[in-house]
Image (cartoon, helix red, strand yellow):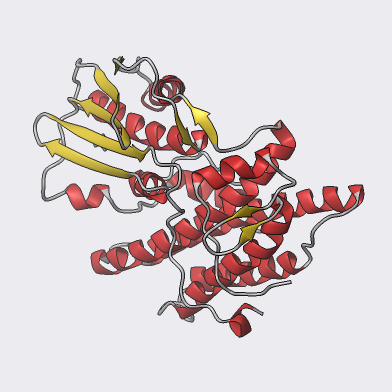
Length: 348
Ligand code: W6P
C-alpha cells in the first residue's frame, strides 16, 4: 500500500479542490492525490511515522515521563492507523469515519499532554524551557497537518462543504471580536473594551482555513483586550484589514501599556495553561480536548506560518502594542511542517 516514506505536502488549493472533485485524480509535484480516503490511508501513516521518529530521536525521549507517555500513545495510535483501509462498503465507510474521529481526538490530547508535560518538567529552568520550544513547534506543525487532512475529510462528510474555503476575513474578524469580548468580560468580570474594525476594501476574500484565522484572531484580541483592561485604558482596540497584491494583512493596535524589549521573548514562549491541565485531568486516556481552547501566541504564529503567512509584534512599552498578521493570498503555498529522513523500513 505504501510506495514511499516521503510525505506529500498539500496546498490550500489542493484541499479546496480535493473535496470538489472526489472522483478525479489530481497531479501534485510528488505524486497523484487520489480520492480523499485513499490519500488519507497512504498519507497518515507517513506523517505519524515522522512524528514517532521525532519523538524517539529527542534527547528527553528516555528520561521525560511526559515524552514516554506521549510516545507510547503515538505508538498505539499508529497501530490503530494500520487498521485504516480504503472503505468500499457503507459499513466500512462509517468505521473509517469513526477511526478518523478517534485519531483526531487522541492526537489533540497527545499534543496538549506533550506540551503541558514538557513545560511542567522544565518549570523554573529558563534554558530548559527555551530548549523545548522548537521541539513543540515541530510536533505541533505535524499535528496541524494531520488534523487538517482529517478535518477536511470529516468536514466534507459532516457538513457537506470544505474546511478550506473562500473566506471573508472581515466576517471571521467580526465573530472573533464578539467571542473575545465575551471571553474577556467573563474572565475579568468587566465590560469588555471596544474594538473598532477598519476595512476600506469592498472584497477581501481569500482561500483559507476559517478555523485557523479565527483561532489566530481570537488569541490576538484576547491579548489586546486583557492588556487594555489591566492598563485601565479607555482607548478602543483597533483592527485594520487590508488587501495587497500578495498578502491580506491584519493589524491589531492596542493602548494596553505594551511589553518592554527585554520581556518580549517571553511573549513568544509556550506557557503552562491551567485550562489545558484541567482538560487533561478530566480524562486520563482520551482527553476530550476542546481544540479551540487558547493555545497562546506561539501557536497562533505557527498557524499563521503554516500556509506561508507570518505573525509579528511591535510594542512600545508604556503605551501599547501592534500585532501584524499577514496571510499569503497565494493558495499554491505548500504546508509548512518539519520532517526527518524517514526510510521505508522505519515506516513499517
Ligand atoms: C499586549 C500583549 C499582546 C500580545 C499580542 C497582541 C497584542 C498584545 N498586547 O499588551
